[in-house]
Length: 348
Image 1: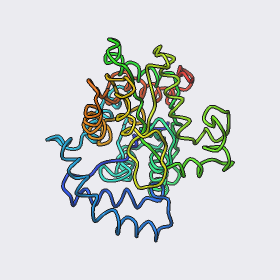
Image 2: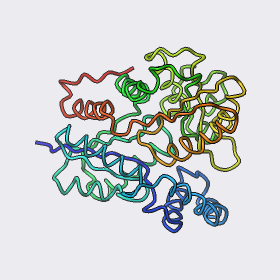
Image 3: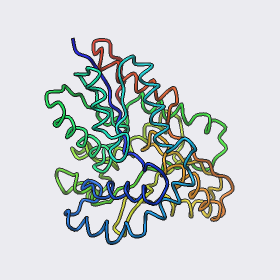
């Protein structure tokens, strides 16, 4: 009889907010060909010549502003998610980070040491992107080939529009929205270069070329990050009952000078007060756990940008984190995999 186990995949964070540890983390992250998808020699020159001499100090200061006494907020929350899921599911669950610790290969070894021979791979990214979902999965599969090539694996597909995921988002956001004390709800997603959209388009002629490309049915949507983000918003606002005037969508965390998905969150926060939206709430559905990009870039820097531009109130709605509705969602996927005959997983 098979012994099931689950591995949760996330990207990771530095060992500490000190400059040396941040530099190590950034180097591993930026040298990933799915993050900076230039030829390796070019990537090496850009990372070592243009980024690492300057960015680690800036990033270290940002990490220090959110770091907890116990450690990295992302790691602490991810471990809480792992422990809660393991308790509820009743089978081994480990956490693997694409960069930093706990390393994905080490997490896999822990599961194998417990006798796991049937593995559910659960990326903690609802949307498909080569720089998050894809790189985390391919990194794990490399470890599988090295440690147990015959391991049975099942991969959880992007769940960006699944009813139970949307409902978990709603339950997380409801206490922050039910009073109606906001002019605009901003859905801020992590940005990616426009180049990645075109690169992932199997036709190489649809994404960002066809008018309304994200709402015009096309095979590219299976790996189109922008389409999937917009579908998350569509299903959320329909299920919650928001009007079109109550929300907007933007993209954050761009790097470099090339075009990334727009509108940019920081620029949007500057313009909203001038357009009459003085009370804003921001949620970040691309992240399932609060991290540097949500706690520092949105909750801290984003609020400062908005208030300086004339805004009156700003609130960052926390990510799903270890909210009971999200743990129930995770466990629902696990139970549907363990007991497919009894599955009641709801797909949009």
